[in-house]
Amino acid sequence: MTMDIVAYLETKKALIDQHLVQLLKRMEAPDRLKESMLYSVEAGGKRLRPILMLAVVEALESKTEYGLQPASALELVHTYSLIHDDLPAMDDDDLRRGLPTNHKKFGEATAILAGDGLLTFAFTCLSQAPYIDAKTKLWLIQELANAAGPSAMVGGQMDDLEAEGKALDLIALEKIHQKKTGRLLEFAVMGGATIAKADRSTKDTLQLFARHLGLAFQIQDDILDIEGDEAAIGKPVGSDIENKKNTYPAILGIEGTKEQLKAHFEKALDALKSTAIQHDVLEGIAHFIIERHY
Ligand code: GRG
Image (cartoon, rainbow, N blue to C red; front, top):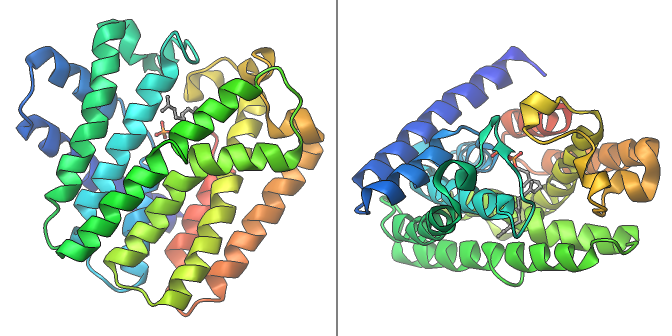
């Protein structure tokens, strides 16, 4: 990974962080709810999804600012999913991003409302996104709702809960991940392509890139659970296995998992390189995703 991509990620993260805080500070809400929503948004995170959206907008030679509000809306949805995923009724986690989880800090009721608030406010932000024409806005609203909703992220979470303790095969596991985490990453890429008004064939190729990248992201997440730095990812190493979760290493072993990671990464890059678009930054982000330690 070159220093250039590290600098790119830092610059874009700062831009998104600033925009997110500005949106939330201007939002009308009871003080405690706002504080709780801001707590999780300001707790950090890599901002991979919004950065990916901005990188696609830029790779297609459109303007960064066109993507900023939709990218922020996407991060709000992601943050809501983390708050709810950490709740006692779900993963029951005490730490997230190295800090106490939202419910540990504010209590369960406020954490549930903070998640609800972030999810709904994301759509307020999207509907008010500047520079975006009405047709594109409608597409973004529909697709973000689909990617986050019962047929994708929320449905994938349900499938995952129901699969706990059962032995899944690779196809079933991939299907869950595609729904649970893949579709939101795919929205980052396809949202960026739609904002930048990419043609059909570029969109189709970018979709292939996004699907392989999404699986590579999830596989790396599973590898980090086994090999990762506990302090950096904020959950005990190996906790997914102890909790009888279905993971790539549980099905394929660690070496098989690494082979799958490589295969999806290479397919993602092949797709990217087959388009005529500027691919250096997107390639750098793909490298970051599979080489990350947190
Ligand atoms: C709606 C309750 C509910 C859940 C949706 C996406 C999801 C299901 C839950 C998130 C929990 C989780 C740990 C999923 C595994 C992969 C993942 C999404 C990791 C976190 O994403 P990163 O690495 O996190 O982008 P940061 O902190 O950088 O934003």
